[in-house]
Each structure stands twice: as C-alpha cells, then as structure tokens.
Length: 529
Ligand SMILES: Cc1cc2nc3c(=O)[nH]c(=O)nc-3n(C[C@H](O)[C@H](O)[C@H](O)COP(=O)(O)O)c2cc1C
Image (cartoon, rainbow, N blue to C red):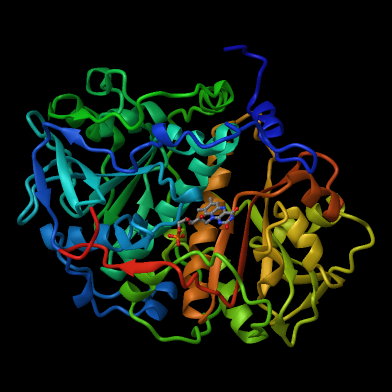
C-alpha cells in the first residue's frame, strides 16, 4: 500500500455527487448474491431458547438508564440477549420470495455484521467462543477452552465483525461506510438488549484490531480458505462485573481448541480496491483503556408517548419505506426523542461508547407542531457550538429554541422539504417525513488517528439505532439513509473544508406500509427457511 494514501482519499472518492454516484457495480448480479447467513461447518451447535416474550422490562425504563436487577447469566438469558439484538424479528414475503428482517437494520438489508459470544462456563452453556447464527437462533462453538479460561466470571464478551463483500456486492466502493454504520447499529442493539436484562455494556476499547481478530478466530486463515473473510470490529463486555484484560482473552483464544470452517457466500467476487484501501489505512492499534465516566444525570428524560415493553420495541423496529407527508408530531414528542442523544455514561446505548461525542445533527424540520419548519442544529456536546458557528454560513440565526437543557438552534426558518429530498439522493422519504437529518462528524485529527474514521460511522449508527427505537416509542417510524450527496449537505450548511463531514442521514415520520407484503413469524414452523 502507498504510504501517502490516506483514508481521506477513500472518503472523497466514495462521496455521491449530484452528477455521479460513487463507483458501484452498475447492476445486481443475482447469481452471486451473497448468502446472508454465515455458518461454520463442523462447529458443534447449541440452540438458544426464544424467551424474550417473558421479559417484563419497559422501554421507558431502559432508555432512561433505570435498569432492572441483573438477570443471572445463563443459557436462556444469553438467548434473550441475542433474540433482542441480532436475531431475526420477522420475515417479509412477496410473490413467493421471502427475506428476513432483524432487530438491527442494515443498508440494503444485506447484513454484513456477524455476532460472537466469548464466555466461561455458564449454567446450560459450556465455556468457549461461539458464532451466532441468526437464521437458526443458535450458537456454533468455534472454540473450547483447552488452556487458560479467560476471567469472565461476571460477564460475557459479545464480538462484532463485518463481511465487506455482502455490502460491496450491491453498493461497490461506498460499502465500507455502510458496514461501519451497521456495526454502530449492532453495538447499540446489543447495549439496549443487555440493559433490558439489567446488564451494562462496555466496549473493550483498548483492543487492537489484531487482538479482536485473535479473540474471535478471524485470523485463522485455514478456517476461511478461499471464502469471504470477516474483519474485526469490536469486543463488548456485557454483564454486571468488571471487564477482563485483553491479554487474558487473547491468550485463552490462542490456546483454545478450534472447530469449524466458514461457508462460501458467493461463487464469484468483484474486487473493490478502495475498500481494501479504507480497511488497510484504518487499523486500530492497542490503546490505553478509557475509564468509564461516572453517570452525570443533568435532567430526567421525559417519557415517550407509548409505554411498551422493551422487547416489543426492539422487535417491532422497522424502516419506513414511505412516509405519508401529513403526519405531524408535537414539539414535546420531538424533544423527547432528542433528549437521549445527549451521552450518559451508564445508560444505553452510550454506556457502550467510550469516546467523546463527535457527531451532531443538522435537522430539516418539516412537520413538528409548535416548531417552525426550517433548518436546525442539535449539538450533542455544547463545546461544538463555537467551532460549528465559525465553520458554517455567517448568516445562520443560531437562535436557541426548545427546552433550556436541549442545545437545539434554529438556523433558518424555511420549507426545506425539496432541499432535504435532493440531498438524500432524491428520496421522497426525506421530504415526506416529520423531520430528516444529517449527522455531522468532526474530522479533527483523523489523519493522525485514522482508526477513528470507521468509529465515526459507528457513532452515527448508534445515533441511528437510538432514533429508530425512539421513533417507535413516539408512535412514528424512522429510516436510516445512507444514500446522500455529501457535498450538497456541506454546501447548504456553508461547510467549506473537511473539518465537518456528514456521514449518515435519517428521516422519521408517519409510515405508509406496502400492502403487497406479507409478514411471517421470525422463527418456528411458519417461518420460511
Ligand atoms: C446504514 C443504513 C443505510 C440505509 N440507507 C437507506 C436509504 O438510503 N434509503 C432507504 O430507503 N432505506 C435505507 N436504509 C434502510 C434499510 O433498507 C433497511 O434497514 C433494510 O431494508 C432492513 O429493513 P428494516 O430496517 O425494516 O429491518 C438504510 C439502513 C441502514 C442501516
């Protein structure tokens, strides 16, 4: 790799422009559509029970960080953790074709994210390293502890990895970004599901990518002969106890007895050298662990409109394919959705996020009763106010609106529906929603620490998952938007250099369902296979 090439080159080249989309395959090669389910032939299987219906935790409690008493770590509670985070939530069917939806959304429903469990012996579950198969709600035991057992007495590790090819098959060069968004969604989904069981989630942020790969067995070349590799993302410590040392996890994985070889997802592949470049220029080194901050609760969160079980909200989350263009929500409901975006150290999903907030929202308000339509900024960290004011158009009003504790500013009262739609690749959902938004990330220092680049997308994905769930609790629906013209958003705001970049968009409003689709259960005899 050319040492002088940087991740910023990938970033520029993967931008959609009004006059040219980022390079993609140009057509869908259905014969080589990647298998959405990875399996490891030869790895012993453990079926997980479906027990989430019995969970009594309310979503309103979880989102406010009021966790129930920690559930015991057991085979069945591990099942609930996966059932409410990475499992299938329903199947959709149209004219004989069926596809699975999961608790975590994914760009193009391609699901590049793979989940892992690393655990000591638990009641009903032998210790080891397991791969999660969402299709079957089962664990495949990739490794058993032959040498030292990692010190995971009061918790487990959930590992996350990505198969870039699954997204690249459809989206080409921009796929690296989408994989990172999806990883962020998955991190948040795990954090929320764990919280509904009374467990905290902490990212093992010190781990290098190489160490994460070692713990999950992703560096075992012999197990991936000529099939699609999984790239390491992160390790999440989940449970009531303190996290183990990375070195202990790596040592246990190195001496474990491994089983299984990965399945092939597509017969043929198209190479995307820019994705290889993005991956190769952003490896995370070992870093000093960040101590979790103590929870500062500056204000009590307002209660969402619907008081639903956490399990219901997690499993009913869907992307709206269309919005009705008429639904309006009260401003109080909007503020209730924004409040949990302000980070709190021991509250999901931010308990899983060790780094300071670097992503803020540029909002297109269309239909919020009591709030003028227009362009707004919502700051997740008030110290961003001054740099953003300096970076943006001097004519913006920056008029503080809404409750005192919410850093929400009106920039321009205006009907921004057409603008939002154009910026989001002409998608109607950006105009017909109650509001749409772009997530503005600070790129400061990215060239010195390029491993933050994928993590900025993770932060966006976490914000996206939070807003998806908040939308459900407010009685509306959201859709993540990965297709947008990056520099049109920057031009609108007046951002001229690369200090602030829009990395992910989203819209929320009154959803219109597609009546042609049939919904089938996630599992059991009536679920398609
Ligand atoms: C990162 C990301 C980008 C997405 N981009 C778009 C988009 O540009 N337009 C759109 O209509 N849906 C978009 N979606 C929604 C996906 O199509 C949707 O999540 C997927 O089809 C699965 O459906 P579900 O969310 O209902 O489970 C995006 C989702 C994610 C997570």
